[in-house]
Image 1 (cartoon, rainbow, N blue to C red):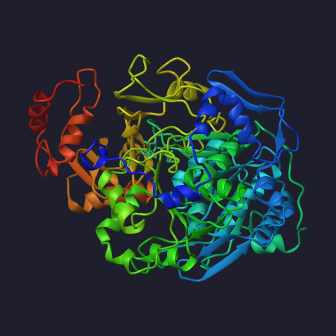
Image 2 (image 1 turned 180 degrees about the vertical axis):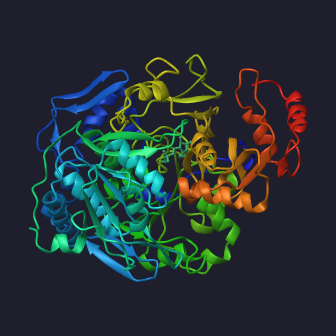
Image 3 (image 1 turned 90 degrees about the vertical axis):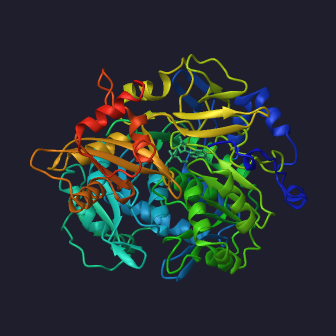
Length: 640
Ligand code: WTA
């Protein structure tokens, strides 16, 4: 992201915002810097522990253990303690169905539902340490399922409901899940998506799954496999409404969440109970300046880390009231989000830059037609937000009175790492500003030396509680991917620039991971989906700039002899990728080519492909069928 003139300006939060903010000065930063471990211990006190830890941190790089000896339960922290504190009737979730129907669900009701769900999965034999796959639409039962697993100590692995059956199968297989929780179908733009049917196909190759729980949502006809499949409503009909929360060791795993890497195989990122929950409860409170009467709305799907940390665990551990929305921003019309803000009087709104750019495209009249006066703070996550989008968001949604928090973090970090606390850190549009208290972020050069001002690679140089504890089943990959670039310093894979005021400007991924609408997709994943097609001999995939989605996928494809380029084949390949991975991985451009530009050592010259994909090298190309064209192009590029 370039530092445009707009991006260089500094914007202070309004006096009104600052006057009411939880954090009034920089003392929290000083306290954390003076003794980070003591600071994190204080943060951990935001949770209720059955037993207190005896050792705050054991750092044996790259392996960290936090709050050793401590015992707690995530579901207890999100529910039981609030009930005990008299918050049983407080609204936990305003659930908005895509159809416009709504449901107001109190903490007491969530508590009861989660207890019953926990007893239901126990009845099916699920126990501590088991892996449970969750493949759900955005319905409250998705959150109940996660909390029910947490309650009994089973490790959930949520798979985004837009992923294909192959993607679901791979994730179930990798973690050897024995239970799947899904729904008959989910709604998207007025149509239903046959989740159960997709899951059934995945399960043909998942012998470890013994039981499937099906939540009824779409009421579409589904196949029911006797003995394996169970309706959720039948299971919970005759179970007790209390289930003892399992006392979990701080370092016991809470969940696995898969994220794309630079190989075709996604990485099962592991998070533990004590550290992750400490990060989630703390960052939600700090970054979003959360108050008791806030109506919080994070527009992410529970299938991503943002949904884990800022729909389920962070807000609920803070006893927040939140909105959960089932559908898309453009259904039935493109002002749906603003209608929801108006309806529920949302005060804190957290979304993605790709959504903001779509709102910009749809026009300022739409938000202007709704009452957005309840909003007091806006957030952004998933990719760098360009200053233009930042300013539009502040003006047309925030009405120039809401600060914007641009929050940088990852599946691997568990919670927000770099973000303003806007009452004390002024914004610069396009910059995520500064690391949160207790987070040691630096910009390093290739050899690991710190760059005080300038461009390099982002690193987190001290352990933090919600850091990933590993990649499921692959310790070597964990070490290679995150810890081999420099000694004992975490490598997130992002470029960054540090400006003269110590502000961080995130520059996007520097590895072969693309950010499509803020979602990680590995180039290798798309390449292997393409070569899986019978007509494809070889392929190379790059992320190209896109005004709306940040990056879009451009695929260069060499066809097998006997296959010829055509519009039909183009579409077929695109659908094939969607079928293998999910619609989010559909290439925007497929370019048939006779040859791929490679260096002498055989590495694909991705920079050249990006230049072609973005129209710089050849103008509007749809085919590079003549091999000599590629040869000539190569000659004008230096070897990378
Ligand atoms: C990118 C999402 C710039 C970054 C929470 C990171 C961002 C990847 C920002 C992680 C931001 C996320 N500014 N880039 N505010 N937030 N990213 O695992 O490249 O889905 O490494 O986690 O998104 O994506 P993930």
